Image (tube, rainbow, N blue to C red):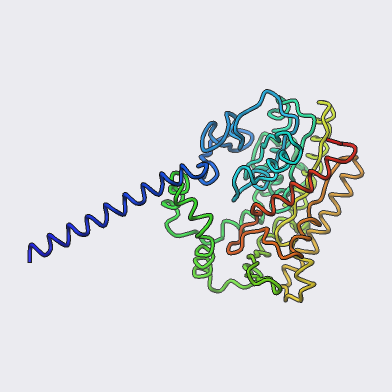
Length: 388
């Protein structure tokens, strides 16, 4: 009996040892095959104005903590934005600033990072981009959260207190923040977060293999969630194409009837004027890149294909378009150049191209979607008054 248990213990030890060795070899192979910075979650450090930034010279980030190979002495073109400009969920070379640089045949220095909004864009333009003396400043405005980011920055960071509306009472917490915090937490969150920061193998699986599992896990934890909260959609003309919509959550970032959104819109317009003024003072040109929510990109095709749309999604389509038109009119009135990438993204949806992740509710494009943004930006800056 003792001998039998000893043999089983030895066999189990060999299995465990070989498993650990296989994982280590897989991790080593992963680090050799890909750039670790394209997969590992970067470590953030606190910043008094920006709130946070990436720890410099870590996981594929440069000495300033931005997603570039190095900090140049001068950058002809600088891109500022949030996680969509950063290129979240895609390799660095697949981000829209990098792809724009390839088309321009000159590098675009990327100052995008998740969590930044219009007020952070102003700060970066005045304090970071200015040092690189760009002739063109690209600012990616993301309807997915930039309006409420402007609001929370102004009312939660004393640096921006002068930007606040002193004639109104604001709590400082947006409806979007409250909705986001109410989302169910993932299982083994601490372990999974640690692995995403230290293991390339796990991070590759998380991006490439695990989205479908994550979607299943979410549905398991929220079985009562209806299509207004989480809507799985498959293209009726191409069954391999699909995505997940979260219309109720997205409505909290674009509905002008919400105080945080309306105030965020006022702050954003002021930020655009500040960006234009700063660019003029530096002898640079400014281009605002209007980037829609994922849900808005699909609105037209959903209607044309006869998809039954929840009321909240239909409202999201309507109000985001209305807010975009209001911003566009403001930009035109103040002679601020902008480009709307919505039509180009809509065209890819009509052609049944998978431009957003299929099995998850991420609001970020994948490489094909970022490519569409890059081509649209390139076309805009190739024409007068830019002519690059």
